[in-house]
Image 1 (cartoon, rainbow, N blue to C red):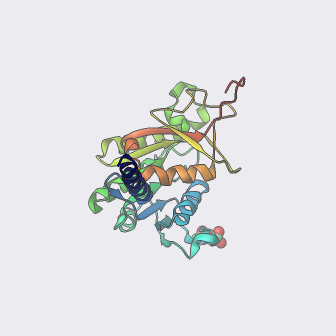
Image 2: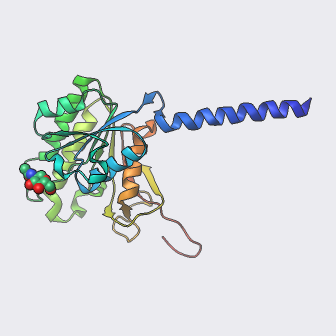
Image 3: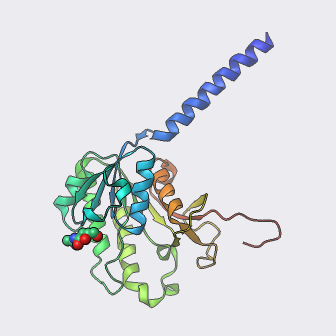
Length: 249
Ligand SMILES: *[C@@H]1O[C@H](CO)[C@@H](O)[C@H](O)[C@H]1NC(C)=O
């Protein structure tokens, strides 16, 4: 009798695990993420997010000024839209019908004082409200979570733009994620770690361990869209630091 129950229990548990696992692939809480928009899809970061999403079988709409810059391995697997984030109509058309949006744009120049990126994010927020899209992850910089006086003067204009992007997200009632990775490296890595409200490992931003591989950045961005605990939060993310015995990280 006990034996029978054990098996019944085992089967039920396995069943529950299976359901848990399969829903985790496509759902985040109540959110079904099937189709995403990647803005800044031809950039260093955006192109990795596109590749990750395509590899996972998501439908991907890319948004960039020049669609010819899309890499050959994804070109035929995405819906490529040409547009400018500064143009509201372009943005609204692009947002229509997607489940989540990723913004991975970079400053035009460090001298630029026009808050170009924040204006773009404001367009995206407005378009998402108009089109009833709720989930957005925006690529910010690690500088966004540093005290302003610690930031090299060279980056100040860009940081003001970053802060304005964050403010646009905070003022929206969207399920936003403001992601702050440190320097990118092209060498692949096998895991990332993310922390809500700051950088994992504290404020040692510029230590050698504080980098993120582009493959992990792509993985985190797609994972995060279906992680409700990140919604409405600033999230620090970097390559996972393995603490070896006797070695101080
Ligand atoms: C678009 O990108 C392609 C490939 O990099 C380039 O050859 C072309 O000149 C670009 N077009 C414009 C309008 O910038």
